[in-house]
Length: 631
Image (cartoon, rainbow, N blue to C red; front, side):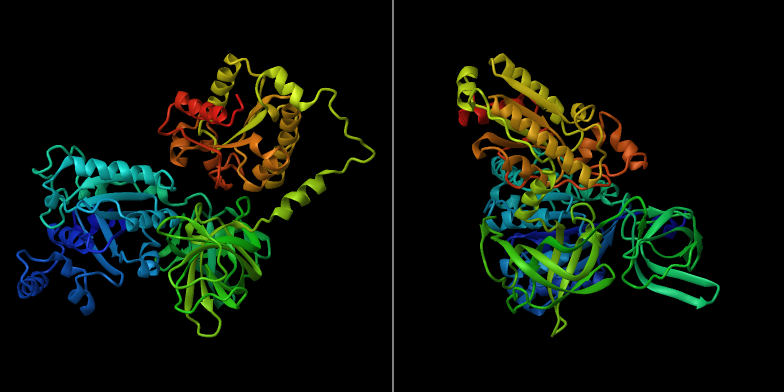
Protein backbone atom coordinates (compact mmCIF):
# COMPACT_ATOMS: atom_id res chain seq x y z
CA UNK A 1 0.00 0.00 0.00
CA UNK A 2 1.21 3.49 -0.81
CA UNK A 3 2.44 5.29 2.33
CA UNK A 4 0.43 8.37 1.40
CA UNK A 5 -2.74 6.29 1.22
CA UNK A 6 -2.11 4.80 4.67
CA UNK A 7 -1.62 8.27 6.13
CA UNK A 8 -5.07 9.32 4.99
CA UNK A 9 -6.66 6.81 7.37
CA UNK A 10 -4.75 8.04 10.43
CA UNK A 11 -6.67 9.96 13.06
CA UNK A 12 -5.37 13.27 14.40
CA UNK A 13 -4.92 14.05 18.09
CA UNK A 14 -4.34 17.60 19.27
CA UNK A 15 -2.89 17.73 22.75
CA UNK A 16 -1.33 20.30 25.02
CA UNK A 17 1.30 20.06 27.72
CA UNK A 18 1.62 22.26 30.76
CA UNK A 19 2.99 22.21 34.27
CA UNK A 20 4.88 24.28 36.78
CA UNK A 21 8.20 25.94 36.01
CA UNK A 22 10.93 23.44 35.11
CA UNK A 23 8.70 20.37 35.36
CA UNK A 24 10.10 19.12 32.05
CA UNK A 25 7.36 19.88 29.54
CA UNK A 26 9.66 20.71 26.65
CA UNK A 27 11.98 17.83 27.52
CA UNK A 28 9.05 15.41 27.43
CA UNK A 29 7.91 16.59 24.00
CA UNK A 30 11.49 16.60 22.76
CA UNK A 31 11.78 12.99 23.93
CA UNK A 32 8.59 12.09 22.02
CA UNK A 33 9.90 13.74 18.84
CA UNK A 34 13.28 12.08 19.20
CA UNK A 35 11.99 8.59 20.01
CA UNK A 36 9.51 8.65 17.11
CA UNK A 37 12.23 9.74 14.63
CA UNK A 38 10.48 13.01 13.86
CA UNK A 39 13.50 15.34 13.94
CA UNK A 40 16.25 15.86 11.38
CA UNK A 41 19.87 15.03 12.01
CA UNK A 42 20.93 18.67 11.71
CA UNK A 43 18.34 19.62 14.36
CA UNK A 44 19.75 17.05 16.75
CA UNK A 45 23.32 18.19 16.00
CA UNK A 46 22.36 21.82 16.73
CA UNK A 47 20.85 21.08 20.14
CA UNK A 48 23.71 18.71 20.96
CA UNK A 49 26.15 21.55 20.30
CA UNK A 50 24.10 23.96 22.42
CA UNK A 51 23.93 21.41 25.25
CA UNK A 52 27.68 20.91 25.14
CA UNK A 53 28.33 24.66 25.28
CA UNK A 54 26.09 24.91 28.34
CA UNK A 55 27.95 22.08 30.04
CA UNK A 56 25.00 19.66 30.10
CA UNK A 57 25.91 16.02 30.70
CA UNK A 58 23.18 14.85 28.32
CA UNK A 59 21.66 16.30 25.17
CA UNK A 60 18.90 18.71 26.24
CA UNK A 61 15.94 17.66 24.11
CA UNK A 62 13.89 20.58 25.41
CA UNK A 63 15.80 22.83 23.00
CA UNK A 64 13.73 21.33 20.20
CA UNK A 65 10.75 23.23 21.64
CA UNK A 66 12.17 26.38 23.22
CA UNK A 67 12.47 28.36 20.03
CA UNK A 68 12.89 31.84 21.50
CA UNK A 69 16.33 33.08 22.44
CA UNK A 70 15.05 34.34 25.79
CA UNK A 71 13.69 30.88 26.49
CA UNK A 72 16.94 29.20 25.66
CA UNK A 73 18.83 31.57 27.90
CA UNK A 74 16.49 31.02 30.86
CA UNK A 75 15.70 27.36 30.20
CA UNK A 76 11.95 28.01 30.40
CA UNK A 77 8.96 28.21 28.05
CA UNK A 78 7.32 31.61 27.53
CA UNK A 79 5.42 31.45 24.27
CA UNK A 80 3.20 28.64 22.96
CA UNK A 81 5.24 26.28 20.78
CA UNK A 82 3.48 24.03 18.27
CA UNK A 83 4.98 20.84 16.88
CA UNK A 84 3.78 18.06 14.61
CA UNK A 85 4.75 14.41 14.67
CA UNK A 86 3.26 11.08 13.73
CA UNK A 87 3.61 7.38 14.41
CA UNK A 88 2.35 4.34 12.54
CA UNK A 89 -0.99 4.70 14.32
CA UNK A 90 -1.80 8.39 14.60
CA UNK A 91 -0.86 11.98 13.75
CA UNK A 92 -0.28 14.52 16.52
CA UNK A 93 -0.22 18.29 16.91
CA UNK A 94 1.33 19.42 20.20
CA UNK A 95 1.08 22.80 21.87
CA UNK A 96 3.71 23.33 24.57
CA UNK A 97 2.18 25.98 26.84
CA UNK A 98 3.88 27.98 29.61
CA UNK A 99 3.28 27.10 33.24
CA UNK A 100 3.72 30.58 34.73
CA UNK A 101 0.64 32.27 36.14
CA UNK A 102 1.43 35.47 34.22
CA UNK A 103 1.07 33.50 30.97
CA UNK A 104 -2.38 32.09 31.69
CA UNK A 105 -3.70 33.65 28.47
CA UNK A 106 -1.02 31.75 26.51
CA UNK A 107 -2.18 28.47 28.01
CA UNK A 108 -5.82 29.25 27.26
CA UNK A 109 -4.91 30.05 23.66
CA UNK A 110 -2.70 27.01 23.18
CA UNK A 111 -5.13 24.58 24.78
CA UNK A 112 -8.33 25.92 23.24
CA UNK A 113 -8.44 23.29 20.46
CA UNK A 114 -6.86 20.43 22.41
CA UNK A 115 -8.55 17.06 22.80
CA UNK A 116 -6.17 15.93 25.54
CA UNK A 117 -4.00 17.68 28.11
CA UNK A 118 -0.81 16.44 29.71
CA UNK A 119 -0.08 18.04 33.08
CA UNK A 120 3.43 17.42 34.35
CA UNK A 121 4.15 17.21 38.05
CA UNK A 122 7.71 17.13 39.39
CA UNK A 123 7.96 14.00 41.57
CA UNK A 124 10.29 15.88 43.96
CA UNK A 125 7.88 18.78 44.51
CA UNK A 126 4.55 16.95 44.44
CA UNK A 127 1.22 18.64 43.72
CA UNK A 128 1.75 22.41 43.68
CA UNK A 129 -0.70 25.28 43.48
CA UNK A 130 0.12 25.63 39.78
CA UNK A 131 -0.69 21.95 39.24
CA UNK A 132 -4.17 22.58 40.57
CA UNK A 133 -4.48 25.77 38.52
CA UNK A 134 -3.70 23.89 35.33
CA UNK A 135 -6.30 21.27 36.20
CA UNK A 136 -8.88 24.02 36.67
CA UNK A 137 -8.03 25.50 33.26
CA UNK A 138 -8.32 22.08 31.62
CA UNK A 139 -11.75 21.72 33.22
CA UNK A 140 -12.74 25.26 32.21
CA UNK A 141 -11.80 24.60 28.58
CA UNK A 142 -13.73 21.30 28.67
CA UNK A 143 -10.74 19.28 27.42
CA UNK A 144 -12.18 15.76 27.62
CA UNK A 145 -9.03 13.75 28.41
CA UNK A 146 -6.18 14.46 30.82
CA UNK A 147 -2.94 12.65 31.59
CA UNK A 148 -1.01 13.52 34.72
CA UNK A 149 2.62 12.66 33.99
CA UNK A 150 4.60 12.40 37.24
CA UNK A 151 8.00 13.37 35.86
CA UNK A 152 11.58 13.12 37.15
CA UNK A 153 10.98 9.78 38.82
CA UNK A 154 14.70 9.14 38.36
CA UNK A 155 15.42 11.91 40.89
CA UNK A 156 13.37 10.16 43.61
CA UNK A 157 14.90 6.73 42.92
CA UNK A 158 11.72 5.56 41.19
CA UNK A 159 9.95 5.43 44.55
CA UNK A 160 6.41 4.02 44.17
CA UNK A 161 5.23 5.67 47.39
CA UNK A 162 6.08 9.13 46.03
CA UNK A 163 4.03 8.39 42.91
CA UNK A 164 1.09 6.92 44.85
CA UNK A 165 0.93 9.96 47.17
CA UNK A 166 0.77 12.32 44.17
CA UNK A 167 -1.92 10.21 42.49
CA UNK A 168 -4.02 10.17 45.65
CA UNK A 169 -3.74 13.93 46.26
CA UNK A 170 -4.45 14.95 42.67
CA UNK A 171 -7.34 12.48 42.35
CA UNK A 172 -8.98 14.05 45.41
CA UNK A 173 -8.57 17.50 43.89
CA UNK A 174 -9.82 16.53 40.41
CA UNK A 175 -13.16 15.35 41.82
CA UNK A 176 -14.05 19.02 42.31
CA UNK A 177 -13.64 19.63 38.58
CA UNK A 178 -15.46 18.51 35.45
CA UNK A 179 -12.75 16.11 34.31
CA UNK A 180 -14.14 12.76 33.27
CA UNK A 181 -11.12 10.87 31.90
CA UNK A 182 -7.90 11.18 33.89
CA UNK A 183 -4.85 8.88 33.77
CA UNK A 184 -1.61 8.89 35.76
CA UNK A 185 1.76 7.77 34.37
CA UNK A 186 5.17 7.86 36.16
CA UNK A 187 7.87 9.00 33.72
CA UNK A 188 11.39 10.31 33.36
CA UNK A 189 11.45 12.56 30.31
CA UNK A 190 15.24 12.94 30.58
CA UNK A 191 15.96 9.21 30.39
CA UNK A 192 12.84 8.11 28.52
CA UNK A 193 11.25 5.92 31.23
CA UNK A 194 7.63 5.10 30.32
CA UNK A 195 7.58 7.73 27.58
CA UNK A 196 7.67 5.44 24.52
CA UNK A 197 8.93 2.22 26.15
CA UNK A 198 8.19 0.51 29.46
CA UNK A 199 10.64 1.33 32.22
CA UNK A 200 12.68 -1.45 33.80
CA UNK A 201 13.23 0.87 36.76
CA UNK A 202 9.51 0.94 37.65
CA UNK A 203 8.43 -2.71 37.49
CA UNK A 204 5.73 -1.84 40.04
CA UNK A 205 3.89 0.20 37.38
CA UNK A 206 1.55 -2.00 35.32
CA UNK A 207 0.00 0.69 33.11
CA UNK A 208 0.75 1.79 29.56
CA UNK A 209 3.44 4.14 28.32
CA UNK A 210 2.64 7.75 27.54
CA UNK A 211 2.90 7.20 23.77
CA UNK A 212 0.59 4.17 23.91
CA UNK A 213 -2.01 6.26 25.74
CA UNK A 214 -1.71 9.03 23.15
CA UNK A 215 -2.08 6.54 20.31
CA UNK A 216 -5.09 4.74 21.73
CA UNK A 217 -7.19 7.37 23.54
CA UNK A 218 -10.61 7.48 21.88
CA UNK A 219 -11.40 10.98 20.62
CA UNK A 220 -14.02 10.37 17.92
CA UNK A 221 -16.78 10.49 20.54
CA UNK A 222 -15.65 13.95 21.67
CA UNK A 223 -17.00 15.63 18.54
CA UNK A 224 -20.53 16.95 18.47
CA UNK A 225 -22.06 14.97 15.61
CA UNK A 226 -25.64 15.71 16.64
CA UNK A 227 -26.16 19.48 16.42
CA UNK A 228 -25.70 20.59 12.81
CA UNK A 229 -24.30 24.11 12.77
CA UNK A 230 -23.12 25.84 9.57
CA UNK A 231 -22.08 29.51 9.97
CA UNK A 232 -22.11 31.10 6.53
CA UNK A 233 -18.78 32.65 5.57
CA UNK A 234 -19.44 33.69 1.99
CA UNK A 235 -22.22 33.67 -0.60
CA UNK A 236 -21.04 32.28 -3.94
CA UNK A 237 -22.90 33.56 -7.01
CA UNK A 238 -20.76 32.98 -10.15
CA UNK A 239 -23.80 33.19 -12.43
CA UNK A 240 -27.59 33.47 -12.37
CA UNK A 241 -27.98 29.70 -12.23
CA UNK A 242 -25.99 29.06 -9.07
CA UNK A 243 -26.26 30.38 -5.51
CA UNK A 244 -24.21 28.61 -2.86
CA UNK A 245 -23.32 29.29 0.76
CA UNK A 246 -19.73 28.56 1.69
CA UNK A 247 -18.52 27.79 5.19
CA UNK A 248 -17.32 25.11 7.57
CA UNK A 249 -19.51 22.53 9.25
CA UNK A 250 -18.52 23.31 12.85
CA UNK A 251 -20.58 20.47 14.33
CA UNK A 252 -23.00 17.74 13.31
CA UNK A 253 -23.63 16.26 9.87
CA UNK A 254 -25.91 17.07 6.94
CA UNK A 255 -27.09 15.28 3.80
CA UNK A 256 -28.96 16.47 0.69
CA UNK A 257 -32.71 16.48 1.17
CA UNK A 258 -32.64 17.35 4.88
CA UNK A 259 -34.83 20.20 6.08
CA UNK A 260 -32.89 23.18 7.41
CA UNK A 261 -33.62 26.59 8.89
CA UNK A 262 -31.68 29.81 8.34
CA UNK A 263 -31.03 32.05 11.31
CA UNK A 264 -31.88 34.79 12.16
CA UNK A 265 -34.64 34.96 9.52
CA UNK A 266 -36.16 31.60 10.48
CA UNK A 267 -36.82 30.74 6.82
CA UNK A 268 -36.82 27.00 6.06
CA UNK A 269 -35.79 24.97 3.05
CA UNK A 270 -34.05 21.72 2.15
CA UNK A 271 -30.44 21.06 1.21
CA UNK A 272 -30.26 20.63 -2.54
CA UNK A 273 -26.57 19.70 -2.83
CA UNK A 274 -23.25 19.74 -1.00
CA UNK A 275 -20.56 21.16 -3.30
CA UNK A 276 -16.76 20.97 -3.04
CA UNK A 277 -13.88 21.63 -5.42
CA UNK A 278 -13.67 17.88 -6.07
CA UNK A 279 -17.38 17.45 -6.72
CA UNK A 280 -20.59 16.84 -4.81
CA UNK A 281 -20.75 14.97 -1.49
CA UNK A 282 -23.44 12.64 -0.18
CA UNK A 283 -22.77 13.90 3.35
CA UNK A 284 -20.86 16.70 5.08
CA UNK A 285 -19.67 16.42 8.63
CA UNK A 286 -17.81 18.20 11.43
CA UNK A 287 -14.73 20.06 10.20
CA UNK A 288 -15.43 19.98 6.46
CA UNK A 289 -15.39 23.17 4.39
CA UNK A 290 -18.19 22.94 1.82
CA UNK A 291 -20.71 24.96 -0.14
CA UNK A 292 -24.39 24.25 0.45
CA UNK A 293 -27.12 24.94 -2.08
CA UNK A 294 -30.77 25.06 -1.04
CA UNK A 295 -33.97 24.21 -2.88
CA UNK A 296 -35.45 27.66 -2.23
CA UNK A 297 -34.25 31.21 -2.87
CA UNK A 298 -33.59 32.68 0.60
CA UNK A 299 -31.83 35.90 1.51
CA UNK A 300 -28.70 34.67 3.31
CA UNK A 301 -25.50 36.58 4.06
CA UNK A 302 -22.26 36.20 6.00
CA UNK A 303 -22.88 35.70 9.71
CA UNK A 304 -26.15 33.81 9.20
CA UNK A 305 -26.28 30.21 10.41
CA UNK A 306 -27.86 27.20 8.70
CA UNK A 307 -29.12 24.54 11.12
CA UNK A 308 -31.54 21.62 11.12
CA UNK A 309 -35.06 22.96 11.48
CA UNK A 310 -35.80 20.52 14.30
CA UNK A 311 -32.58 21.18 16.22
CA UNK A 312 -32.16 24.87 16.90
CA UNK A 313 -29.47 26.64 18.93
CA UNK A 314 -30.27 29.20 21.60
CA UNK A 315 -30.83 32.81 20.58
CA UNK A 316 -30.19 35.70 22.96
CA UNK A 317 -28.84 39.22 23.31
CA UNK A 318 -27.79 38.58 26.92
CA UNK A 319 -25.82 35.59 28.05
CA UNK A 320 -23.66 34.26 30.85
CA UNK A 321 -20.02 33.39 30.08
CA UNK A 322 -16.58 32.64 31.50
CA UNK A 323 -13.78 34.76 30.03
CA UNK A 324 -10.03 35.03 30.25
CA UNK A 325 -8.88 38.65 29.99
CA UNK A 326 -5.97 38.87 27.56
CA UNK A 327 -5.25 42.58 27.32
CA UNK A 328 -2.73 44.54 29.35
CA UNK A 329 -5.30 47.32 29.71
CA UNK A 330 -7.93 46.54 32.39
CA UNK A 331 -11.44 45.68 31.33
CA UNK A 332 -13.97 48.52 31.17
CA UNK A 333 -17.30 47.52 32.65
CA UNK A 334 -19.97 48.52 30.12
CA UNK A 335 -17.22 49.64 27.75
CA UNK A 336 -17.73 49.17 24.01
CA UNK A 337 -16.33 46.00 22.42
CA UNK A 338 -16.88 43.88 19.35
CA UNK A 339 -17.88 40.27 19.96
CA UNK A 340 -16.65 37.83 17.28
CA UNK A 341 -18.77 34.67 17.35
CA UNK A 342 -18.51 32.08 14.54
CA UNK A 343 -18.68 34.20 11.37
CA UNK A 344 -20.53 37.20 12.76
CA UNK A 345 -19.28 40.26 14.63
CA UNK A 346 -21.60 42.34 16.82
CA UNK A 347 -21.23 45.26 19.19
CA UNK A 348 -21.30 44.19 22.83
CA UNK A 349 -20.55 45.29 26.37
CA UNK A 350 -19.93 43.48 29.65
CA UNK A 351 -22.95 44.33 31.78
CA UNK A 352 -21.85 42.60 35.00
CA UNK A 353 -18.94 40.71 36.56
CA UNK A 354 -20.56 37.94 38.59
CA UNK A 355 -17.26 36.91 40.17
CA UNK A 356 -13.57 36.52 39.46
CA UNK A 357 -11.99 33.10 39.97
CA UNK A 358 -8.69 32.92 41.82
CA UNK A 359 -7.11 30.30 39.55
CA UNK A 360 -4.75 29.21 42.31
CA UNK A 361 -7.27 28.59 45.09
CA UNK A 362 -10.51 28.37 43.02
CA UNK A 363 -12.01 30.93 45.42
CA UNK A 364 -14.50 33.45 44.02
CA UNK A 365 -13.94 37.16 44.45
CA UNK A 366 -16.14 40.19 43.87
CA UNK A 367 -14.38 42.69 41.59
CA UNK A 368 -15.25 45.70 39.45
CA UNK A 369 -12.72 45.14 36.66
CA UNK A 370 -10.40 42.49 35.23
CA UNK A 371 -6.67 42.62 34.58
CA UNK A 372 -4.36 40.62 32.33
CA UNK A 373 -4.74 36.80 32.67
CA UNK A 374 -7.66 37.01 35.10
CA UNK A 375 -10.63 34.67 34.66
CA UNK A 376 -14.18 35.62 35.57
CA UNK A 377 -17.82 34.79 35.11
CA UNK A 378 -19.62 37.68 33.45
CA UNK A 379 -22.84 38.75 31.76
CA UNK A 380 -22.60 40.10 28.21
CA UNK A 381 -25.16 42.13 26.29
CA UNK A 382 -24.99 42.27 22.47
CA UNK A 383 -26.48 44.79 20.05
CA UNK A 384 -28.26 42.01 18.15
CA UNK A 385 -29.06 38.41 18.94
CA UNK A 386 -26.49 35.67 18.45
CA UNK A 387 -27.28 31.96 18.05
CA UNK A 388 -25.23 29.66 20.22
CA UNK A 389 -25.02 26.45 22.21
CA UNK A 390 -23.51 26.23 25.69
CA UNK A 391 -19.75 25.65 25.47
CA UNK A 392 -19.93 22.30 27.28
CA UNK A 393 -22.22 21.00 24.52
CA UNK A 394 -20.68 22.64 21.47
CA UNK A 395 -17.34 24.40 21.70
CA UNK A 396 -17.56 25.80 18.18
CA UNK A 397 -20.77 27.76 18.79
CA UNK A 398 -20.16 28.25 22.51
CA UNK A 399 -16.91 30.22 22.20
CA UNK A 400 -16.16 33.82 21.25
CA UNK A 401 -13.55 36.55 21.45
CA UNK A 402 -13.89 40.19 22.46
CA UNK A 403 -12.15 42.86 20.37
CA UNK A 404 -11.34 46.39 21.50
CA UNK A 405 -13.44 48.74 19.39
CA UNK A 406 -10.65 51.34 19.27
CA UNK A 407 -7.40 49.37 18.93
CA UNK A 408 -8.90 46.31 17.17
CA UNK A 409 -6.90 44.05 19.50
CA UNK A 410 -8.29 40.83 20.90
CA UNK A 411 -8.84 41.50 24.60
CA UNK A 412 -10.61 38.36 25.85
CA UNK A 413 -11.56 34.80 24.98
CA UNK A 414 -14.84 33.47 26.31
CA UNK A 415 -16.96 30.37 26.79
CA UNK A 416 -20.75 30.77 26.85
CA UNK A 417 -22.58 29.07 29.71
CA UNK A 418 -26.19 29.92 28.80
CA UNK A 419 -28.67 32.73 28.52
CA UNK A 420 -28.47 35.24 31.35
CA UNK A 421 -30.95 34.50 34.12
CA UNK A 422 -31.75 36.82 36.99
CA UNK A 423 -33.50 36.32 40.32
CA UNK A 424 -36.39 38.34 38.86
CA UNK A 425 -36.96 35.52 36.36
CA UNK A 426 -38.05 33.26 39.22
CA UNK A 427 -40.38 35.81 40.81
CA UNK A 428 -41.83 36.66 37.40
CA UNK A 429 -42.45 32.98 36.78
CA UNK A 430 -44.25 32.67 40.12
CA UNK A 431 -46.43 35.67 39.29
CA UNK A 432 -47.19 34.39 35.80
CA UNK A 433 -48.36 31.04 37.14
CA UNK A 434 -50.87 32.60 39.55
CA UNK A 435 -53.84 32.94 37.23
CA UNK A 436 -56.52 31.67 39.63
CA UNK A 437 -58.71 34.35 41.22
CA UNK A 438 -61.16 34.42 44.12
CA UNK A 439 -59.25 31.70 46.00
CA UNK A 440 -58.12 31.70 49.63
CA UNK A 441 -55.34 29.58 51.06
CA UNK A 442 -56.72 27.18 53.68
CA UNK A 443 -54.43 26.99 56.68
CA UNK A 444 -53.45 23.64 58.16
CA UNK A 445 -55.59 22.26 60.98
CA UNK A 446 -52.48 20.61 62.37
CA UNK A 447 -49.33 22.73 62.47
CA UNK A 448 -46.14 21.79 60.67
CA UNK A 449 -44.29 21.52 64.00
CA UNK A 450 -46.89 19.08 65.39
CA UNK A 451 -46.62 16.92 62.28
CA UNK A 452 -42.83 16.73 62.80
CA UNK A 453 -43.30 15.85 66.47
CA UNK A 454 -45.82 13.16 65.51
CA UNK A 455 -43.46 11.72 62.88
CA UNK A 456 -40.39 11.93 65.16
CA UNK A 457 -38.35 13.53 62.40
CA UNK A 458 -38.18 16.85 60.58
CA UNK A 459 -39.64 17.43 57.14
CA UNK A 460 -37.33 17.85 54.15
CA UNK A 461 -37.19 17.72 50.36
CA UNK A 462 -34.35 15.71 48.81
CA UNK A 463 -34.14 16.78 45.16
CA UNK A 464 -32.16 14.34 42.99
CA UNK A 465 -31.04 15.85 39.67
CA UNK A 466 -28.83 14.46 36.92
CA UNK A 467 -28.75 13.03 33.42
CA UNK A 468 -31.09 10.26 32.33
CA UNK A 469 -29.31 7.01 33.16
CA UNK A 470 -27.28 8.54 35.99
CA UNK A 471 -29.10 6.37 38.54
CA UNK A 472 -31.43 8.91 40.15
CA UNK A 473 -34.47 6.64 40.35
CA UNK A 474 -32.46 3.67 41.61
CA UNK A 475 -30.95 5.77 44.39
CA UNK A 476 -34.33 7.36 45.19
CA UNK A 477 -36.03 3.98 45.63
CA UNK A 478 -33.19 2.67 47.79
CA UNK A 479 -33.29 5.88 49.86
CA UNK A 480 -37.05 5.57 50.38
CA UNK A 481 -36.58 2.00 51.65
CA UNK A 482 -33.92 3.11 54.14
CA UNK A 483 -36.09 5.97 55.40
CA UNK A 484 -39.09 3.64 55.67
CA UNK A 485 -37.01 1.22 57.76
CA UNK A 486 -36.35 4.13 60.13
CA UNK A 487 -40.13 4.69 60.46
CA UNK A 488 -39.99 7.95 58.52
CA UNK A 489 -43.02 9.36 56.72
CA UNK A 490 -41.63 9.49 53.18
CA UNK A 491 -43.10 10.36 49.77
CA UNK A 492 -41.46 9.60 46.41
CA UNK A 493 -42.17 11.87 43.42
CA UNK A 494 -40.67 10.22 40.33
CA UNK A 495 -40.22 11.97 36.99
CA UNK A 496 -41.89 9.26 34.91
CA UNK A 497 -44.74 8.69 37.36
CA UNK A 498 -45.91 12.31 37.56
CA UNK A 499 -46.07 12.47 33.75
CA UNK A 500 -48.68 9.72 33.82
CA UNK A 501 -51.13 11.99 35.63
CA UNK A 502 -50.21 15.31 37.22
CA UNK A 503 -48.06 16.42 34.26
CA UNK A 504 -49.46 14.12 31.57
CA UNK A 505 -50.44 17.12 29.42
CA UNK A 506 -46.88 18.46 29.17
CA UNK A 507 -44.26 17.89 26.51
CA UNK A 508 -40.51 18.42 26.71
CA UNK A 509 -39.98 21.95 25.41
CA UNK A 510 -38.11 24.35 27.71
CA UNK A 511 -41.43 25.91 28.77
CA UNK A 512 -43.04 22.54 29.47
CA UNK A 513 -40.02 21.34 31.46
CA UNK A 514 -40.27 24.49 33.59
CA UNK A 515 -44.00 23.95 34.16
CA UNK A 516 -43.35 20.29 35.03
CA UNK A 517 -40.88 21.25 37.76
CA UNK A 518 -43.17 24.03 39.02
CA UNK A 519 -46.05 21.59 39.53
CA UNK A 520 -43.82 19.03 41.21
CA UNK A 521 -42.29 21.69 43.48
CA UNK A 522 -45.70 22.86 44.64
CA UNK A 523 -46.75 19.23 45.23
CA UNK A 524 -43.59 18.55 47.22
CA UNK A 525 -44.31 21.64 49.30
CA UNK A 526 -47.78 20.29 50.23
CA UNK A 527 -46.30 16.99 51.43
CA UNK A 528 -43.53 18.89 53.22
CA UNK A 529 -46.05 20.99 55.15
CA UNK A 530 -47.52 17.80 56.60
CA UNK A 531 -44.14 16.73 57.94
CA UNK A 532 -43.05 14.31 55.19
CA UNK A 533 -39.58 13.68 53.83
CA UNK A 534 -40.17 14.12 50.08
CA UNK A 535 -37.75 12.43 47.67
CA UNK A 536 -37.96 14.03 44.20
CA UNK A 537 -36.11 12.46 41.28
CA UNK A 538 -36.16 14.57 38.11
CA UNK A 539 -33.60 15.40 35.44
CA UNK A 540 -34.63 19.05 36.07
CA UNK A 541 -31.94 20.32 33.67
CA UNK A 542 -32.39 24.05 34.23
CA UNK A 543 -30.88 25.75 37.26
CA UNK A 544 -33.62 28.40 37.45
CA UNK A 545 -36.27 25.68 37.85
CA UNK A 546 -34.38 24.01 40.68
CA UNK A 547 -33.89 27.39 42.30
CA UNK A 548 -37.65 27.92 42.16
CA UNK A 549 -38.18 24.62 44.02
CA UNK A 550 -35.67 25.78 46.62
CA UNK A 551 -37.26 29.23 46.93
CA UNK A 552 -40.70 28.00 48.05
CA UNK A 553 -39.29 25.94 50.95
CA UNK A 554 -37.47 26.93 54.16
CA UNK A 555 -33.76 27.03 53.33
CA UNK A 556 -32.45 24.34 55.73
CA UNK A 557 -35.03 21.86 54.44
CA UNK A 558 -34.11 21.64 50.73
CA UNK A 559 -31.27 19.27 49.81
CA UNK A 560 -30.25 19.55 46.17
CA UNK A 561 -28.54 16.23 45.39
CA UNK A 562 -26.42 16.12 42.24
CA UNK A 563 -26.37 12.54 40.93
CA UNK A 564 -23.16 13.04 38.99
CA UNK A 565 -22.23 10.65 36.21
CA UNK A 566 -20.20 11.06 33.03
CA UNK A 567 -22.55 11.55 30.08
CA UNK A 568 -20.76 8.83 28.09
CA UNK A 569 -21.42 6.37 30.93
CA UNK A 570 -25.11 7.35 30.97
CA UNK A 571 -25.30 6.79 27.21
CA UNK A 572 -23.69 3.35 27.56
CA UNK A 573 -26.16 2.44 30.29
CA UNK A 574 -29.20 3.83 28.41
CA UNK A 575 -31.61 1.72 30.54
CA UNK A 576 -34.70 2.80 28.58
CA UNK A 577 -33.09 3.14 25.13
CA UNK A 578 -33.79 6.88 25.15
CA UNK A 579 -30.33 8.07 24.12
CA UNK A 580 -30.39 5.73 21.13
CA UNK A 581 -33.77 7.10 20.06
CA UNK A 582 -32.68 10.70 20.63
CA UNK A 583 -29.47 10.32 18.63
CA UNK A 584 -31.40 8.73 15.77
CA UNK A 585 -33.86 11.64 15.77
CA UNK A 586 -36.85 9.75 17.19
CA UNK A 587 -36.90 11.94 20.31
CA UNK A 588 -36.39 15.69 20.10
CA UNK A 589 -35.25 17.99 22.90
CA UNK A 590 -33.61 15.23 24.92
CA UNK A 591 -31.24 16.29 27.71
CA UNK A 592 -27.62 15.48 26.91
CA UNK A 593 -28.28 15.07 23.18
CA UNK A 594 -30.33 17.95 21.82
CA UNK A 595 -31.09 19.85 25.03
CA UNK A 596 -28.62 21.09 27.64
CA UNK A 597 -28.11 20.14 31.28
CA UNK A 598 -27.01 22.83 33.73
CA UNK A 599 -25.02 21.16 36.50
CA UNK A 600 -25.70 22.38 40.05
CA UNK A 601 -23.06 24.84 41.21
CA UNK A 602 -23.53 24.46 44.98
CA UNK A 603 -25.54 21.30 45.70
CA UNK A 604 -25.91 20.15 49.30
CA UNK A 605 -24.99 16.60 48.28
CA UNK A 606 -22.96 15.10 45.42
CA UNK A 607 -22.98 11.38 44.67
CA UNK A 608 -20.97 9.98 41.75
CA UNK A 609 -22.65 6.87 40.41
CA UNK A 610 -19.87 5.95 37.98
CA UNK A 611 -17.50 5.37 40.93
CA UNK A 612 -19.88 4.78 43.88
CA UNK A 613 -22.30 1.94 44.59
CA UNK A 614 -26.01 2.55 45.23
CA UNK A 615 -25.45 1.74 48.91
CA UNK A 616 -22.60 4.25 49.15
CA UNK A 617 -24.76 6.92 47.51
CA UNK A 618 -27.72 6.39 49.83
CA UNK A 619 -25.43 6.29 52.87
CA UNK A 620 -23.97 9.65 51.81
CA UNK A 621 -27.48 11.15 51.71
CA UNK A 622 -28.49 9.56 55.02
CA UNK A 623 -25.37 10.89 56.75
CA UNK A 624 -26.16 14.40 55.46
CA UNK A 625 -29.73 14.16 56.77
CA UNK A 626 -28.47 12.98 60.15
CA UNK A 627 -25.94 15.83 60.38
CA UNK A 628 -28.73 18.28 59.53
CA UNK A 629 -30.82 16.65 62.27
CA UNK A 630 -33.61 15.81 59.83
CA UNK A 631 -33.60 12.20 61.06
